[in-house]
Amino acid sequence: MKRIFFISILICTILLTGCSKYNEKDIVKDLSKKYKNVSSYQVEGNMNIYNGDNNYKYEVTSSYEKGKYRVSLINKSTNNEQIILRNDDGVYVLNPKLNKSFKFQSDWPNNSSQVYLIKSIIKDLNKDNKVTMQEINNGYILKCKVSYSNNKKLRNQKIYLTKKLDITKIEVFDKNSNIQIRMKYNNLDTNAAFNNKYFSVDENMKSSLDVTEKEDEETSLLDETVYPMYLPDGTYLSNEETVSKEEGERVILTFKGTSPFIIVEENAVRSKDTEVIPVYGEPTMLLDSVGAMSNNSVNFISSGVEYYIATENLSKEEILNVVESINNISSIK
Image 1 (cartoon, helix red, strand yellow):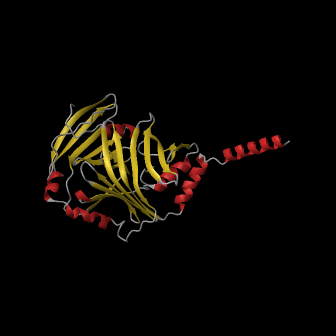
Image 2: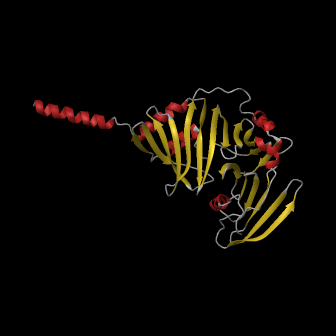
C-alpha cells in the first residue's frame, strides 16, 4: 500500500514538474508584461545588414517616449548619420550632412517590423501563434515571423534573451535561412529621460552646421554612371542621357522591354539652407542608407549619389533586386 502511495506521489510530481515548464506562451506573455508599461526607453547597439558579399555596419541609438521615436543610424564606413524621427508633426528622415530632411506621409514604425524598437519586437511575437523557444545556457532564443512591408524576402527572426528576459540580439533571416540583419543590443535603458527638444527636427538638424568645406565638396561629386547588375528577363538599357545642372550632372537611364523602368542619378548636394522635402513612400533601409519606397518608385542616397527609380511594371521585390545590384563602381552595360 505504501509502495502504491509512493508511486502515485512520484507520478504527480513528474506531471506537475512537466506542467510548470516554461513554454512559448508563458515567455511571450511575460516578455509582453515586462515592457507593457514602459513609457520611455533607449537602445544602444550595432546593426549589420547583409547584401550578398556586402556588409553594411551601423551604430544605432533608438529612443522612444510616449509615441515619439528617434532612431540614429551612423554608417561606420562613411561616418554619415541619418535620423528617423516620429513626432507630433509627422515622420521624417533627416540627413544632417546634406542639411536636408525628408517628410513622409507614413504610419512608421507601426506598419513594419523593426529590429531596434522594443514594441515592434513584442508585436511580432504576439502576432505569431507558432512562436518557438529554445533554452540555452544563459537564456532563451525565440523564433517568430516578421512583417517587413517593403521587403518580403525577410521571413523570420530570432530573439535572444537573458534569463531575466532582457533582449541581447536580434537576427533576421530570408526564406533560405540566410541571415540578412543582425542587431546587437549593447545597452537598454527602460527609464530614459529626454528633454523637450530631443524629438525636434530643428534640434536634430543642428549637427549639420559642423560640416566642413571639404566634406561639402565631397558630396557634390558624380564621377561615373552606375549601372545595375540585375535586370529582369527581357529588359535592356535603351538610352542614357546626361543633363548638366548648376551643381554637377544628372544621368537618366531608360530601360525598355518586358519590365521597363528608369533610373535617375545625380550628385547629392548639400543644401545651403535647411530643406524639408515632402516624399512619397515609406522609410526603408536600402543599401547603406534609409530611403523612400512606394509601390512603383524608390529614392535613396548611397556614397554621395542620389538615385531615383520609377516603374509601372516592376514588383517591389524586383525593384529591391535592382537596388541591391547597384554598386558605386562602373560596370559593363
